[in-house]
Image 1 (cartoon, rainbow, N blue to C red):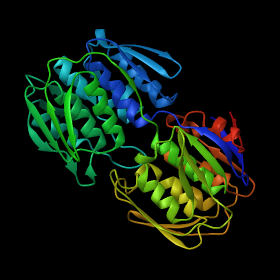
Image 2: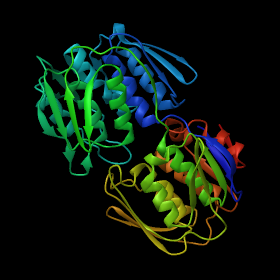
Image 3: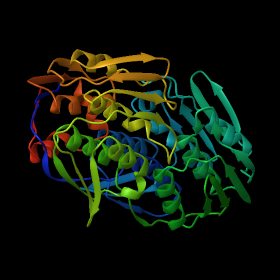
Amino acid sequence: MDKFIIEGGVPLRGVVQINGAKNAALPIMAASLLADSPVTLHNIPSLMDVDTMMHVLHTVGADVVRDRETLVIDPARFNVAEAPYDLVRKMRASIYVLGPMVARLKKAKVSLPGGCVIGQRPIDLHLKGLEALGAKVRVLHGYITVENHGLKGATFSLEGPQGSSVGATCNILMAAVMAEGRTVIHGAAREPEVRDLVDFLNEMGARIEVQDSTLTIEGVKSLHGTHHTIIPDRIEAGTYMVAAAITHGDLILKGCHLPHMESVVSKLREIGVEVEPVVGGARCRCNNCRFNPTSIRTLPFPGFPTDLQAQFSSMLAIANGESTVTDTIYPERFMHVAELARMGANISVYSATATICGVEKLQAAPVMATDLRASAALILAALASEGKTEILRVYHIDRGYEHIEEKLDAVGARIRREA
């Protein structure tokens, strides 16, 4: 099992290329199944999750060909209406094939994703939306079974207890574009990745209008192939911004799209980090002073993203004072805290809030990654620590960051991967 060996204490300087957004690429790959001719997707990141989705598409009958950052998906032979447990258990995003199956094949049998290492993430809103469109939905023996005897437009809300659901919005959107009549979805997720899916579907011939958190869809009988470029990954960009800050470095993030990151940039500036736009991206730098403490509360977009709270926790661990981080999206998402404590961080967690008392320095220690974003948080902490840190179970990082050790090495980090 691979591990990272990181020797900290080196300011990172140089240019980092930001790749296409994983959380936009996965639903768009699934939505390609709705077309009646080939789809070409550009700026596709090289990630384990993308490979898994390619396998899912192959399994349901689509032809998928990859050439570096370009995917060509031909859905002509899409005819399998089942996604078994063995596929869905590897990646929750596999459930994105549910909407296209219901819309095109008139039926679906998709395994329930189950729990995961960051707590329960129910799919009740996915099912609620499909039922509102007239589908017959049953959950039996660990599978979602859906029958479509003619989807019809409806008006309903997809807002749940933790706010809007990105997954449910994407899935119901993919089903609704081919329903008869008009569908109005209130409480829809506003994340840039959802907007990228909307743009993609409209390019294929869908008729979707967006107004804040309301989506209005006029159903069409068919969709055609198109070319589409995936938006930059704002979570990857935010992670490298923290890497520049926590090492007191200076990085230019090529391809970074700052309008998608206003809440993140605002917090960075608040704690004393410089972020400014440059041609083709952004620049992030920090001098040798300690960070100001702050309070972070994760919220659906345009609020602070839950996918960056772990990385910011690593940075706030060496802030000059007490900070708090509250995760309203996934309250259990604090498993990185125990590992950061092994590196000298002073963090306590009560309910959905971490209280972080900044220390002067972190120290190297053997630690273990528990999930994708926790992996990034530990890498960041290691870059700022004294000594050599060994991070185990780094296969998590390959799900969401393309060649992270190569990118960090190119800007001065002392990092290597060992088997």
